[in-house]
Each structure stands twice: as C-alpha cells, then as structure tokens.
Image 1 (cartoon, one colour):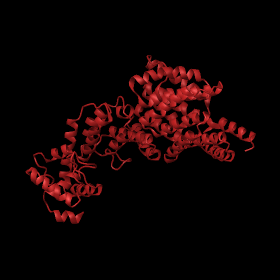
Image 2 (cartoon, one colour; image 1 turned 45 degrees about the vertical axis):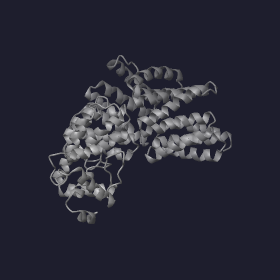
Image 3 (cartoon, helix red, strand yellow; image 1 turned 120 degrees about the vertical axis):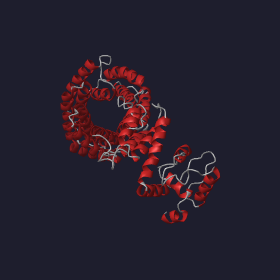
Image 4 (cartoon, helix red, strand yellow; image 1 turned 60 degrees about the horizontal axis):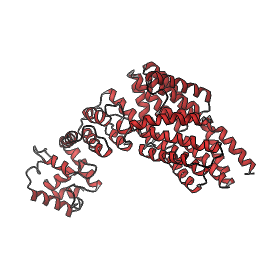
Amino acid sequence: MASYEKRLGEGPALAVLRLVGLFDRPAPGEQVRVLRRPPAIPALTDTLANLSDTQWRRALARLRQARLLSEADPQSDDLDAHPLVREHFGQRLREESPDAWREGHSRLYEHLRDSTKKFPDTIEEMAPLYSAVSHGCQAGRHQETFDDVYYRRIQRDGRTNYSFAQLGAVGADTSALSWFFSPPWSHPADGLNESDKAFVLGAAGFRLRALGRLREAVQPLQAGLEARIEQEQWENAAIAASNLSDLHLIMGETGEAVDYARQAVELADRSGDQFQQMASRVRLAQSLHQTGRIAEAEALFEEAEKIQQEFQPGFPILYSLQGYQYCDLLIDQGKYDEVRERTAQTLEWVTREQLLLAMALDHVALGRASLLQAKRDDRRDFAEARNHLDQAVEGLRRAGIQAFIAHGLLARAALYRVSGNFDQAQRDLEEAMAIAERGSMRLYEADARLEYARLHLATGEGDSARQSLDATRNMIAEMGYHRRDGEVQELEQRLAAQGA
C-alpha cells in the first residue's frame, strides 16, 4: 500500500483513495459528490475540487487499472475497494491529516442527518441514520450525534426503544452504539456527558445480551449499574440491575440472578416508578421460579399485577415479557385455560402496537398451553399448537433476541417429538443447542439436553437418553435450576421402567 501511495503521488488518484477511506462499505456516489462540493477540504479534496468529469473518470480508471478500486458497476456510481485498501488509506488520513479526517466525516454526518426522513418506519429507511451515527462519532461530535440522531430519531426519544422493540434492528443498533465507546465495550467516549455514558453502557449490555454475547454484556451492564447508583438515578439503576439478573439467569448463575433481582426491587421502590416496581418484582419472581421456589414466585407475580392495575388500569393484567413470564409459571402449574384466556387478551394489545417480541412470546405461551392441554386430554390434534409455535419461532427470529429464539425452538421441538416428527424435532434441537452453547446460555443448554433425553426415549435410544439425562442432572444441580427436578425424576422413572 505504501508503494502504491508513493507511485500515485499527491494528486487526484490518491485523494480518491482517501475519500474511500472514510467509509467502511462501498462509498455511495451521492455521498462522494457531497465530499467533492466546495469549499474544498484541505488535505482531502483540494486536488478534486476543480476536476472536470473527464479528469475524474481518468483518475478512477487509473485506480481500477491498478486494482485499487473495484471495477465500475454500469448500474451505479458507487466507489468500492478491498477492505484493506479502505482501512489503509483511511488510517493514513486519520494519522497525517486529522482535521481533514474529522471534516470529511462531519460533512457526511450533516448530509445524512439532514437528507434522511426524520422518523424512519423501516430498517431500510433507518440505515442512513445509522451511517450518520458512524460518521458523526468519527468526526468527534459524539454528544450532538447521540442527542440529535441516536436518541431522538433512532430511539424516538427513548420512549419506545423503537429500533429495537418494533423493528428488531438488534445488530444495527449494537453496531451504532459501538461508536460511542473507545474501545467497545468498557469505556464510553469522553465526548458524552456522564448521564449518557451510563445510558450507552446499559443499552450496549442489553443489546449484546440479545445477540447472545452474554459474557461481553456483563461488563457494560455492571458499569452502567454502578454509574446509575452513583448518579442516584434509581429508576435506571433498577433497569440495569434487572438486566443483570436476567443475564446471570440465562448463564445458569441462579444465585447471582436472585441477588440482582432483589437489588432491582429495592432500587425500583426507591425510585417510586410504578412500572419498574412491577417489572422488578416480575424479574425476582422469574428468578425464584427457576430455582423451584414456586410459592414465593407466585406471590410476587400477584403483587406485580396489582401494581400493573394501579398504574395502567386500561391493561389490568401483566402483558409483554412480564405477562409471558407469569404464564410460564401458570403452565408449570397446569393452568392451561387461564394461560389461553390471558394471552388471547394480551396478544390483542401488543399486536395493536406491533411489539415483535411480545407478540412472539404470546404465541409461545399459546402453543405450549395448547400442546400440554392436548396431551393431558389424550388428544392427537396438535394443529393449534403447531400454528402458534410456527408463528412464535418466525416472530422471535424477526425480534432477533437469541435466547428467546432458542426458547421458541425448544418449545417447537417438544411439539414435533410429541407428534412423531422426530427429524424436525432433531433439527430444532440442534439449532437451539448451538445458540445456547455459542452464547454460554447454560439454562437453555440444560433445557435442550433434557429435551434430547425425551427425544431419545421416544425413538427407543435408551442409552443415549440415559447419557443426556445424566448430563442434565449434573447441570441442574450445579446451577440450582430446581424447576426441572420433577421432570428429571419423571424421566428417571420411565428409563428405569424400560430397563435403560
């Protein structure tokens, strides 16, 4: 690269490569023209400002002949190069002409900020704003970019968590947040105020968790909790503690999950925010449910629902994630009719708001309740369960949260097993196990191993069933995941009856 740079000399061809170095993907022709507009950017576009179209094409042809630019696309005027070429010339510009680097990114930021629909409704419409975040932060305008683009327009002032909850743009949102760190994910950029540093820590941890990168999520979530407590922002501190509880629960660290959930309840009560008081109690109830403390969990769910009725009288039962977690307990108690009645109502509410995750979880609850009710009543009609669980898995994929995708796949694998579709059960199980193992989701890994034991038993593979069950028993004991103790005992009895 250095030899090419020397051969090109200070001229239009080298300036083009520096322009391309401002991008981490093909440079759109429109944005290249924005950079070339007067006034010239010293050390970046001063040799390009007065070029004729012929001279511009000649410079591009020279670079393509040297294979430093990709071949021209007849349908597009975008400029592209190998990522190593972009990285090299971008790094040289940043090191040798930092003012030009910042001004180039600043010009792109302003163009994307001003030319994009104010409040995009789709992921495709949102893409230019995500690019604006990248360029704005590289221009050193972190606070302005956070306030005017990320928080106000991508997150819709934080009221609805729009890009995450309604568009399912988990990966794009995580990538955008990375620009507010130096480096990701431990140190927020110095250009942010202290409150927004705490925000990006919590938001990054939440999204990393959603992507299944659980170990990476611990540090920013913990740092965000500490920052919120130091700032005495009790509501946000309760959110952070609740997220940490959920993270540790999925990793199979039930003791830590219960401890953080209790801290979330304390912080929520200190804040006086009724939504957090409700949500934190549900988080503690969910953690206790997994440890087998059913009576305590049930009492907390009922307490949370009373708070729900007080602050949202138009929605008198728990819904969305909190509603699903209550239904999860009710399913374990065999209260299938109550689950179906509750979820029919909550599905109507969340569908009205197009909340991707909430809709998918309601279908999981309806599918599981329908399946177990059909089994209990000795019916072989699983069409309703299949319909709900297919919608659930599709919806969970759109929502993009890996742990819930694994959960949905496990529920559908059980349906396939019960209905005799063993190959399809195997496929869903393999995918769920891959997600769990890749993301250190030991809770779902234990569930997958338990379902493998059931599948092996159903297909007459007693030795394999025994191996899966032994592995499950050891994991459950280590994690304190006592919710599954009864299921393990039941399988033990069935294996003993078959002499396995």
